Structures are given as structure tokens and as C-alpha cells.
Length: 283
Image 1 (cartoon, rainbow, N blue to C red):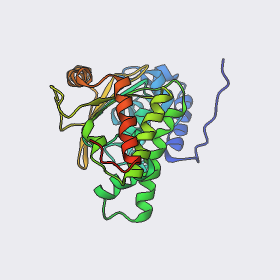
Image 2 (image 1 turned 45 degrees about the vertical axis):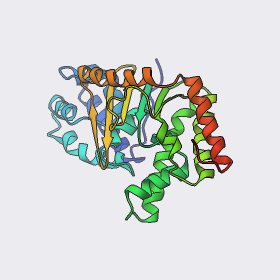
Image 3 (image 1 turned 120 degrees about the horizontal axis):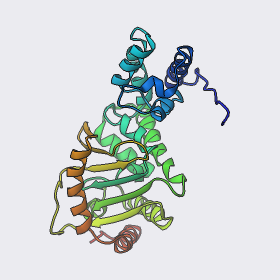
Image 4 (image 1 turned 180 degrees about the horizontal axis):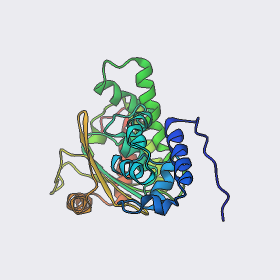
């Protein structure tokens, strides 16, 4: 049996919450399985909450309060954990950023911007500046830092598997000065060369473009249902109903079928980056 690993409850609000959850569960003489019995969640899910790796949903908090007779303690503390885990992310996106760290596969489509996981520091800063023009410098710095930190996922050579479909216009319509656009595209190419991502381009005149106005993000996990996320200006929508996720996937699969193959897409990304480096307007 693996040695029990104690969590430093002073490290963060989620760590304190998780430590308290485990202490009260063990004081009640309950195993993880017994604590979740009668809920829609598994023992591994509760274990990750105890280790501050996952936030507790309100319905599970109510269930735990009832089973452990904790008089609503955990339900009341859900809001504290939600605020603590949010950080510089928008409230609607914070659960998605957290889910990325558990995902086995991530698949994205974007017709307007390079996705956050792939952004360089100048690109991320420009996006944040354009959407939050009144933010103070320290607020922008915090958002940029947190966005770039998400890319640590790619430090693992095997996980997650990441596919991305980009509309051609995202690359050819410069969002930054040419040298910085070249740097941004070089980053995408470098990740592809390392086999950490698989990029595809949807050409501007592709025959089918369903959901052109929406970004689409799909995640699959080892032990939980798939998730789909889409967002617009200042709002986001998460779908975790497997049947509805399947419907959205049909649109994504058509986009993938219409897009250039990965090898041709990578060659085009590299060619456009070279145009930027040479001061040419990408054609």
C-alpha cells in the first residue's frame, strides 16, 4: 500500500478545504467510497478534491454535508474555493483551465484567434489588452502569466494529445507586427515538430464551415464524461451532457474533414511565418 501523503492545508484555500474534508471523513470512519455512496461521483473524484486537485461541485458538497452531518460546512465553503481557484482567469473559464490538466485529449477549432494554449507572450498580451483595455498593468501581467502557464501541459511528452484546427485568416491577417507574428507561428510549428500538437488549417474557401462563428473545445478524460466548451466576447458556455457533446462533435468532425491534412497545414504555417520574417504580406 502506498504511503499516505499529507497535504499542507496552509498552502491554499483548496488545500485547506481538502485537508478539512479528509479529516472530517476519517473522523466519521468513512472510506472514500462510503462518503460518495448515493451520489453521482466516484471515490477517485473525492480523493482528488481532498488533494486540492479538483474543485467540489455544489451538489457533491451538499451530499457530503448530509453524509458526514457537517451542517452545511462544505456547501458554504464551495464559494471560497471557487474564488481561490479562479485566479486571473475569467470566472466562466476557470473550470475549463482546471479540466485541461486532467484531459487525455484536447481538440480545438478557432476561426478568429490562435487558442490560448498556443499563444506567445506578445500575442496573449495583445489579446488581453484589446479585450480588457482598462486593466492595470499588473492585472494584464497576471492574466498573461496565467495564460502562458497553461502551456506547461506540453512539457509532458505524451499527454494530452492535442489537435487544433485554425482558420487560414487567423494566420494571414496579422494581429501583431510581422516579426512577432513569425514568432507566434514558429511556436506552433515547433510544437508540431515535437509531436506535441497536430495542427490543421481550414482554407478560407473551404466548402463547409459549420459553426464558423463559434470556437469549439473538446476534452476527453480517463474517468469522467467528455466536455465541450465554446465562448464569445466576455462569456463562455460549458457542455457536459454526453449526448449534446456528441452533437457538437459532428460539426467539429466536418471541419476536420474539410481542413488540410496535418503535413500540408504545417508546411503552410512555416511558409506564412517565413513571409512575415521577410517582411512580405502573406498571400
